[in-house]
Image (cartoon, rainbow, N blue to C red; front, top):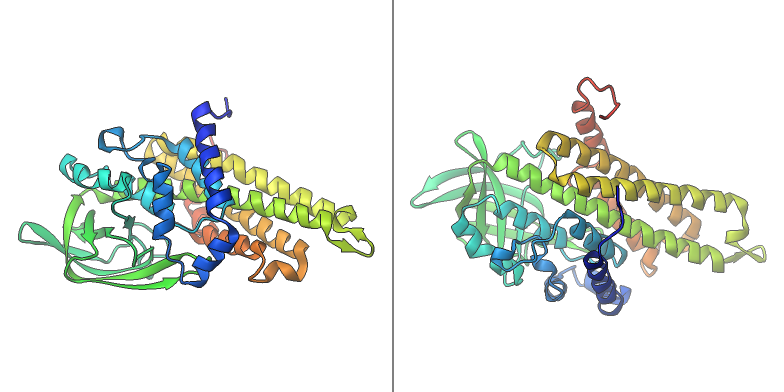
Amino acid sequence: MDFEFTDDQVSLRDAVTRWVDKGFTFERRHAIAKAGGQTREVYTELAELGLAGLAVPEAHGGLSFGPVEAMVVMEELGRGLVNAPYAAAGLMAPALLQAGSPELQAAWLPKIAGAEVLVVPAWVERGARYRLDQVTTTAKAQGAGYALSGQKSVVPAADEADAFIVPAQLDGAIALFLVEKSAPGVEVKAYPTQDGARAGELKLANATATLITKDGAAALEFAADVGIAAACAEGVGVMDKLVALTVEYMNTRKQFGTTLATFQALRHRIADVKMQLELGRSMSYFASLKLGEPAPQRRRALSQAKVQLGNSMRFVGQQCIQMHGGIGVTDEYIGSHYFKRLTVLEMTLGDTLHHLGEVSERMQDTAGVFA
């Protein structure tokens, strides 16, 4: 199998890298995090690179790129520690809206591609424990539309979004709805997250909504897998940069009159760290390449990838922080922020234990030998 990137993919990577290096320094990110994590301006800058339309079909003004291009972008955003809600708004939301009618797509996808609106999925509910089929939010017909009641948690950039894509129970099945933030019955309570980004609680009290599809379960599962692949790729980028920072630190920091890099025990530890990084990278590639597979194979593959990335991110983060010593946990040092992001990514769209259970359920009669 050819794992070389095409010229277009390399150009895309280079464009994102240049923007990160020039436009999103650690000082800027740190200031945004201290101010509460609002990143609508940052998302607009990403849109100017064409990234808002990356996953939007060409017919609606997008670039119609696929999972590999999304992986390339997410790795670079991870290296730059960009805390804008790109995966949710730029990748997952278009995937969900493409389950809707042609009229609905024509009304919203061009606006998403042009970053005129910020649309994010709101799927997390208290007590669901990462299960997508545990939905207590309800929908009922109301006039020509629908009314939703319920609450969603940890909604990305909730107070900055213009609309939300919400799963809700309708006639005994999970359906998807588009809810505008300005609609009656919508209440948002926002807060900063541990990794310097922003999220919020979304309360719906007979909120006016537009139906996307009544067959929401399949679309929601696919969008979640898109989000998992994005989280895996971002995790690779974060780990890559954290390892590079650690190696640089070990080559400059002296102890007992010599650099840390000369100590054999630490050299062995960094070798183990790099091994976990490469295991994570290979499974991130695996996840992105499996997004086009039928649902049963795709879901198992994405859970397998998330298990490996969860283990890798935890190991790399802990080891790199320990090799830095006390400075590694200070807020002023960039390494601590990479560690926080890895911790949040490990719990995004299902933690390691959850996905280990998902893999186990899908083993069937293979006894762990994957065909």
